[in-house]
Image (tube, rainbow, N blue to C red; front, side, top):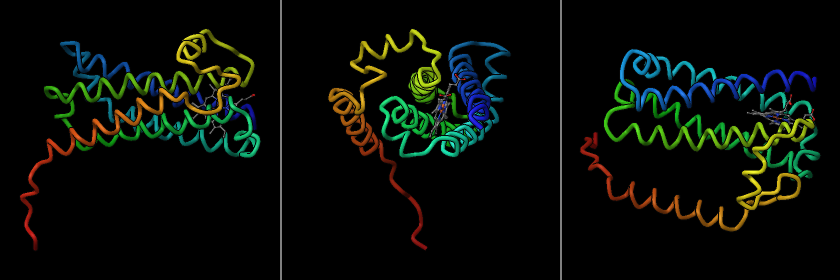
Amino acid sequence: MTGMHHMLVHFPEAFWALATLMILVGAWMPGRLAELSRIALLPVLVLSLLGALAAIVSGLLVWPLAANLASPMARNHLLMALWSLGLYTMLTVLVWRAGAAAFDGSRRWVLVILALSGGLLFATTGTLGGHLAGATTRFSELLRLTGWEVYTTFYSPGWVVAVMAMIGLACAVLGHRHKRPSGGRDD
Ligand code: HEM
């Protein structure tokens, strides 16, 4: 069953990488390739979510939750998998709701920023998984520069929590300022 997780994780990792690339190409490049990237993005995102669910379910089935939560590396691996799933779910809903207009004007920046953030999240998920399985990578050196020691850091560094709180606040203020009048009927 362990091998099942090792096999299944390739689906979300590959589809998330592909979706991220397609968003960058769709947002910045001219021509047919960019057009194809924009058209095919939604199915790729949907497949990535299905793959992620399969990977998460297999992870939860294979290893006892108590063991995962007791180890800093396994706990953060699980946490990063859930953050990645959350972020790509948000991207999928945005692309689905906006349809052909998802890449119009400054909207493309929302996709690009989310895609780049998602790239960092799923790369971290995979890196921690690799460390758990004994296949270490140099990506963890980058994490160390932010104060995250993959073998021991159990909680987010304080500055990360502060930055997250500031981003949340900025989004709330922006959302409030640009709130559209409802204009709907009461009936
Ligand atoms: C989107 C979800 C996930 C992704 C992309 C992912 C990715 C990975 C990767 C790339 C590996 C290394 C596999 C290898 O080197 O062959 C791994 C291993 C591992 N993952 Fe995940 N994972 C996910 C979810 C989970 C969840 C939800 C759990 C536990 C609840 C989990 C627990 C583990 C453990 C314990 C290992 C180490 C396996 C070993 O020691 O052989 N993963 N994962």
